[in-house]
Structures are given as structure tokens and as C-alpha cells.
Image 1 (cartoon, one colour):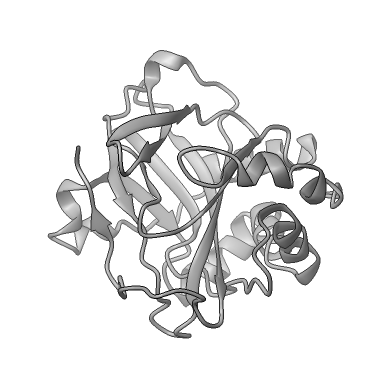
Image 2: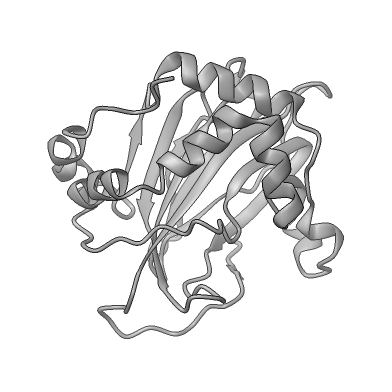
Length: 241
């Protein structure tokens, strides 16, 4: 099955990416092959093996509500491969050199490194009432020590009403205001550069019917060494305005 093949798109959209506010970012609709995206949704909707970080982390419990994810250990990697093979293939493809080259062309960030172990990444599922507080992500990978510089979020929700909420919010740190509000629509990718000021989240509780969840894939990318001064953020720093 075809996954993604428009690798020239990175160079075409590089100016749009670099000039976005409140920080370099872009929304790309129809990101994957449509048949591939539909199959991913079908697999995730039927996937049974999900972990929940907030259930074992008291600090996270008030900031990350009704959020589930996979993979979360080696057994769940195997289960993802067996139960959701298209999803697994997409995650693998988005970590290949040809795809990270596309991301470098788009963002201007050279020598991007994927994270095949998907530390904190992979498949995300938010149930009704769920939220993810406004935050800035960790910047140092706890295993490799690599410096995190880029997020790719791919939404997989074929049925979505605006009043359900669940929009990704991008906030201006200096002015403390919302600059972008992005609906989690089917096959919509959001890519953005991470920094101390890249505040994002969906802070308002999800208002979906009980049988409709919010699905997404999350990929994180790194460089070997930061090219600026920084303070390590091994844990998520939360910002509430």
C-alpha cells in the first residue's frame, strides 16, 4: 500500500513553514495516501492494547486526562505490529531517511534523527472528557541524549464536528495569546519546531459522544547536539494562561 510519495512538497512549503506564527509550523491536509489513512483509522479503532501514563503518574493526572497511547513497552510493539500492521508500517516509514530528508527540506533543520523506539510517540487516543494542558515538550531524550527539535502529528478522525472540540492550540508565549486553533481532521498533519516557547496542547475537555475517540499518530525528531544554549527539560513543563 502506498503511504507517502510527494517528497518535493518540503521545499515548496519551506517559506510557509518558516514564516508561520507563533512559531515555525504548518498544517498539511491529505498528507498520506487516502486509502492508507482510512486503513490506519480502522485499525486504531479496533486496537485493544493501550497504555495510560496518567494512571501511574500523579503529576500527569490533572494535565493529561483520558489520554491513551501505544506502544508503551516491547509487548505492545509486537501487538501493534500484529493487530495494526498498516499503522505500524506508517510509523516505520515516517522514521526513514527519505522522510527525514523531506522534513529537513521543509523545516530547514539539518541532520534530523528519528526515534525508532518512539519514546512518548506512536499512537494517541483521547476519550470524551479528555484534555492535554498547554505545555512545552521535553527536549532531551532520556535514552539517547539527543535533542528534540520537531513534532509531527497526524490526525485520523473521519467524522469530526467543530463543537466536539479537541483542537490543537498553538500559543504565542510572549503575548500569552492563542494564535492557531487546528481541528483534528482526517489525514491532517501538523508539523512544528520545538523550542522553549513552543506552547501547544488541547486544554479544553473533549465533548465527543461516548463512542467517538480522537485518534492521532505522533512522531518526534531530534538532532545530536543543540545549536543554542538551553535548559534541559527531562519532564514536561506545563503552562496555563
